[in-house]
Each structure stands twice: as C-alpha cells, then as structure tokens.
Image 1: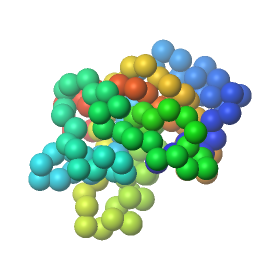
Image 2: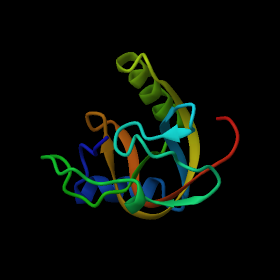
Image 3: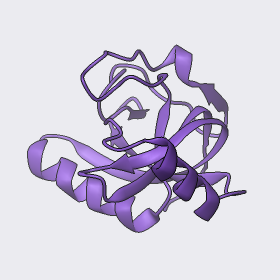
Length: 133
C-alpha cells in the first residue's frame, strides 16, 4: 500500500482537516496465529493492545511512488478501510481480511491512496484496539 499523492499542498490539506485526530482504521489479514499485514511483513503477527513501532514490522521497498519513510498506513475513514477490505477479498479469496480501529502516534506524512481519492496518514507507531469494528 503506497501513497499515490503526497505533495506539500495535499499533505497540509489532509493534515488540517484531520488535525488532532489520533485514530484511524487499518486492514489486516486474519490468520490462525493472529493479525498480520496485508502487504509487507505478512509473516509477523501484530499484537493487540500494545504500541507497535513500524521499524520492527515495515521495510520500505523503494518504488517510483514510495520515496517517503516507511510506516503504518492508516485510513482516516472507516468507510474507506472497509472498501479496501472488500477489494482485498476479491484478489485474495483464500484469506480473510478484517478492519480494526487503531490509534497512532508520530505521524510522518499525510497523503492520498487509491488513485488519489482516499486520505491516509503514515505513522511510526500504532496500537490495535481490542474488540470488533
């Protein structure tokens, strides 16, 4: 999952709109062992109820779109996260995906994903909240 648009103007506009917000939603793959990543670090389970640092789970593979620091990509709208979960289920029919509410700290950058339509934040730390979404 990479940001498509994250220029200074876009980033500042999203940051202003969601300023002070410290939570969002994230799509996870649900396995017998627990929650894993949808893309990078799929083999590592993410503990629930504990602050997680991105450097222990995320390694940025540079692409033509990804020239910002690695971190947790967080949807700022639950509706957008649910749409992404449904999209993932289409392509990965063998996996079960869930949307979980997460708190975040140390935002790195704000930008848009999915063809520049979905506002997101990339943060250094998240905490996956307990309970269903």
